[in-house]
Length: 546
Image (cartoon, rainbow, N blue to C red; front, side, top):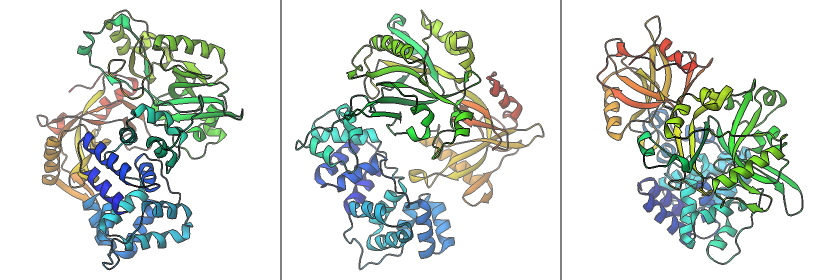
């Protein structure tokens, strides 16, 4: 674990992308199989342990440390793995005993649930604080080292002098600990074989665009379609080498989510890979993301849930059909093939994302501002903007420049009063960086309406943290209540993507993606918005007065 621990420690403190790539490449080159493969799996989110959870770690810590001291320490540090690693009673005579990441992974996978606490405790006894930290990070899965799955695969590509897309193309043909993948990268084995159609293709992503950036672009070179308020998926279906029919539904990151949507997958009777948006349709119209969430991440799905939240896919690209990889074709040619494909499969749980008619950027701007009159019809409430794509764009993995753009609808904005604050996690564990804010009710009281932990700069975070510490009225465990009266308090401008009714929240509403837009040091708390004004957003009303 020492080598893995050293890698995690250096990655956590390395801010540069190139620096992280160099560290990863060196680790993969110098570390033998299968240790490097298990480390790769941990960093790409491919490792899960059925019986090893954060609760196990808390219980072990409670047995070995004073519970009050542990609670105070956890509150201050803000990270479970770091807290336990530092507080665990160390046996200095056995510290740094050899324990590999392979030993840990195989142990977690094979040890019965009732024996696991004893085994994990013995590992913690054998390691120093760095090894304990890495072990606990591995168990909880919350590495927080600034390494995405894409970055890890880019490091693999650099290791072998290949492109990241080449690694992406074979990624779903390999499993941890990836010995065949490393053999191919190092030239001692064949490239992993992937079925032509029943596979996941690395998605093509878009760049946000602002109105002033349209000037050098010719509208005739682009097409546009609605940006839907769902999740990006790929529907893959076809036959394996033995002629057996296979159907899969993948998330944007390549996770197989077929088990959560058996009603969808059952209708995949085609031989193709489709790119699109997973949505819920009820009463003939597409529902908002809040409705879709009722079906996401469900471990079990029954007939009642499927009937209450009927899912479908609104497709906007055809990546492969039969044995033909279509990604190299211009978008407009793929679109023609997609339209023909949808016509040929009318019973499949898919429909076609309609194109937006426009001749000038002003036309598109008008459609974006009013989707119901721009062609979205009954589905207008589920639109969160427009997608703009070059007619001649091939389908390229990652986020290539100049091909796809997203122009989201302007966020909704309110002025709210800061009410509560809590320390963040990881590098923010010493700052009060998680904030709860509220608006005024008709009775003249503040009611919480949302939480946000981003949208401010590092400099603003220091100011916010100082304000919280200097204006704390009460403490509730790790939460500080901040002074909030009509005359004293802090007003923050909050931007959010949507608002839904909610029975789970005291205010009766729930925000989607709230974040700080700016800090209103110039405003008094009495000038903040009201719940009545906020509720106007439920019908896509105008912004409340600021």
